[in-house]
Each structure stands twice: as C-alpha cells, then as structure tokens.
Image (cartoon, rainbow, N blue to C red; front, side, top):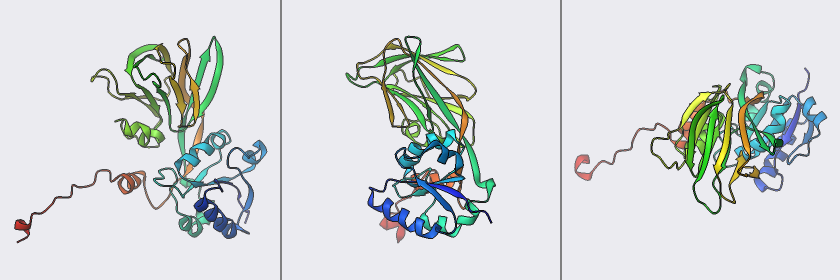
Length: 288
C-alpha cells in the first residue's frame, strides 16, 4: 500500500506541541513519508504540491496560519488540538493514532470550505491581495473615534457602517470573532458571507448573510489614524481614506478532514455549551 506523503505544522518552541509532535513522529515512522515540518513558512512550494495531507499541531491560530498556503495547494488539513478551544483542531493525538489509516485514505471525510479573497487598492494599484479563512476585520483603532464605511454589494449600495468597524466572515469563521460580536452561526459547508457590524451607531444595523458569489466593496468615508484591516487575526494593514477594499469568494478551498465521530454541532455544544438546557437550582424546601 502506498504511504501517504505528509507535512507537519507546529511550533516546536511550545513545550506541549514539541512533545506531541515527537510522539506523532515516532508513531508515523514506517506508516507515512514526512516531507517536512513547515511551521512559520519553512515549506517550499514543491513540498506543498507534493503533499497528500498536512497534520497541524496546536490550536486554531496555528491552523489559520498554515491554511493560506495549504488552501492554495489543495492540501487537506488534519488538526490536532494542543491549544485551548480548538474548533478547527478537531482531533486528539490518540484519535489520530487510532484512526490514522482511515483519516489518510477515506476521501469522504474531506470537507471543502470557502475562503475569502481580500484586495486593498490604493492609488489605483493593488497594495495587498490575500486570503482569509475566518474573517476580514476593519477596526477603528486609535484615536478610537467612530469610523464610517460605505458598503456596496455587487455594485449596489448596502449601508453606511458607522461605528467601531465591520467583520466580514466565512461560515468557518462564523463561530469566531463574528459570534462574539453577535453574528449568526453558519454551517461550515455553506457558501455564504456574514457581514457583522462592530458596535454600530444605530440599533437597526444588524448582521446580514449574503450569497458568497456577490462581491463586497468598501469605501472609507471617515477613518482614524490607526484604522486597520486584519485578516484572520494576523495580516495587518493601515487604511487610508482613498483606499478601496474588495472582498469576494476565493477560487480555492480550505480542505478539512472532519472528525467522523463528532459533528460541528457536537463541537459547539461541547466547547461553548451551545443550546444547553438551563440548570435550575432546587431550593432546600423543594428537596424535602
């Protein structure tokens, strides 16, 4: 049987990650060909193109960091949670060891998730073109006055977002910053985009879900000196008043190997206590 070619992503400077990777490397010896540990951009393009799977050790932040290059090369991700919450890092090391053969052969476990493409145009030239797995965020920044963002969807005026900023989220990112800001939870398999305002200056501006095939254009009307655009919590760029930000569905996909023993909803219930029944306190008198 052909051995899968795999990449390892993980920050070995973190003690628990280092120990977990060591244990995995001992286990996988003879079962797969390890091409490289590609943490922090150490992977060459030819390795990314050659790999069958990427095993990412850490939390969701580590996966998001690796996912941009992996999605460009259609490498499925198997996330091993060595972090805290871990929505994307669905597996424990023991689960991976126990079901390694199935995880690296059963193509039905691979789920395609949409990715956003963000372009910042300045003086009619593209300043930044990048992808986002979770979300694109524009945040007011210092001096922390309200900002004004004119939003268009497919050339049609949507709204002026006046407040602390805006979150443009994928279904994968709907359980991240979007959820904390009051946005809806979307099934990860949907092809849709969530627009969630940050502390809007009007109670009537609520989150909205749009078709992922529609292109969003944002024209800043009023900014602060420190107004910034952030992609997946990592890529930063200060905005200027004449910038044009366009956000659309990327042609590539983020491929995730799902845990066959739990659903997205199991993860929500287990890690966020989502939709749990209230725990009623019984008085001492009622007990008698």
